[in-house]
Length: 228
Image 1 (cartoon, helix red, strand yellow):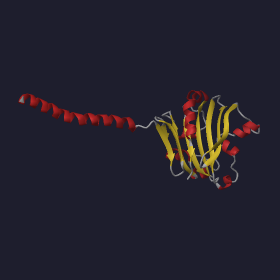
Image 2 (cartoon, one colour):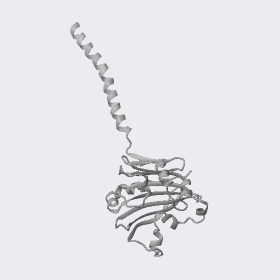
Image 3 (cartoon, rainbow, N blue to C red):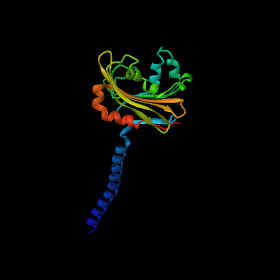
Image 4 (tube, rainbow, N blue to C red):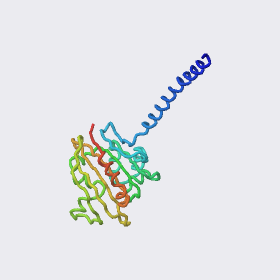
């Protein structure tokens, strides 16, 4: 009996040690499963702006974008750069950089670029839905024929209203001079006090966009402007 009792006590002691280890292991599994969120949330709390995109995209930070923008010699570029409140870019291509983002050349991988900028004095009274639509290319002039247009199509062009701003959401494609076709999903919004513009630009070659349109449309739909 004493021998059996000793075996039982040894078994119980081993069990009391093993149970906490099992519990700890299970907890670690649960924690490891929760540690990696399913999305990247690009956010500027100061400007009240955010959007979501899948994990795994490469971030090109504001510092890199600002450094490249500072090299521009275009008229007014320095003033516009100085009025930027927040900007970031994301891409699925690890080789892309700030230059790729700022160029209008057709990328073969998706690029998502957000920009929040204070309007300059001469812009505040002249901004309109047409000028919001034409931030990247003169789309309005292409439509009305006042500017010679390349081959292009517009798939969506509608008003977008957010709590802190309103403007235009446009999706269009056009053929570049090099023959490549690019699709742009562009949301351009003006703050309620007409002092700030918010832009979310999603673009890649038309074949790339068509392949990834479901994912890219979700990113565009997630763009939220609450304002300050």
